[in-house]
Amino acid sequence: MKQKFFAIATIAVLAIVGVFVFEHATSAQRPDRNAQTPGERGNRQGGERGNRGGMQGMIDPMAIVDNSWVDLTFAVKVDDETLVKARPIYQATREQFAAKMTELRAAGDWQAMQSEVQKLLTTAGPKFQASLKEVLTADQLAKLNELTRQRQERQSQQRQRMNRFREGGGRRGGGGGGGQ
Image 1: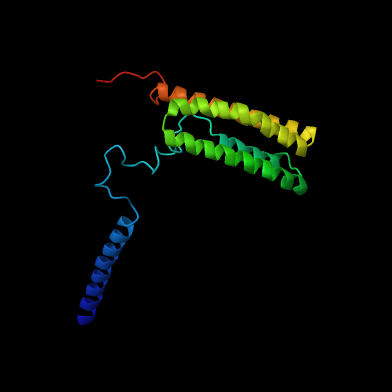
Image 2: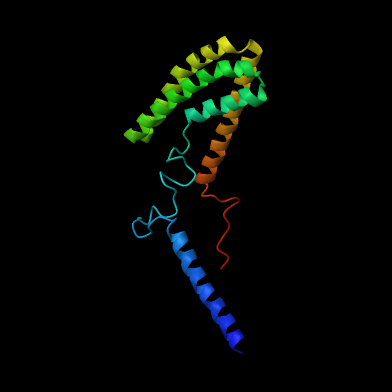
């Protein structure tokens, strides 16, 4: 009888200690709920959920460079020697874009930011293409440009679908009546 009581008491104490440790371990990892305003709750640090700091619907120039590198590496399948020559071009362009995006984010004017990103792409794009032209063959560059164009079309279509979804309130169908 004493052994059963001791076993049950031990299990109860372990359970209580386990709950206590679990509660404090998880609360140390989440932000202070009392310090947040109701609008901040549930959002990731730095902006809206899944939105890279609030750049909703805006073109990310660094993503364009990153995707181009991935396409060059895996879809165009250039040799290692060409990748080594192309890498400094990609790095310089990405660093230029990152510096400009940091500057624009600090300003905080999202409307101006969108036009500045367009200007950045139109001025840096031809220089980037000219630099790649020195490293890639005409066929490789044509294939890379076609892959980039296709990716931009898909992203544009996706943005249009998302805008239609948002405008429609996230509903499909005719909206229906109340049923009462």
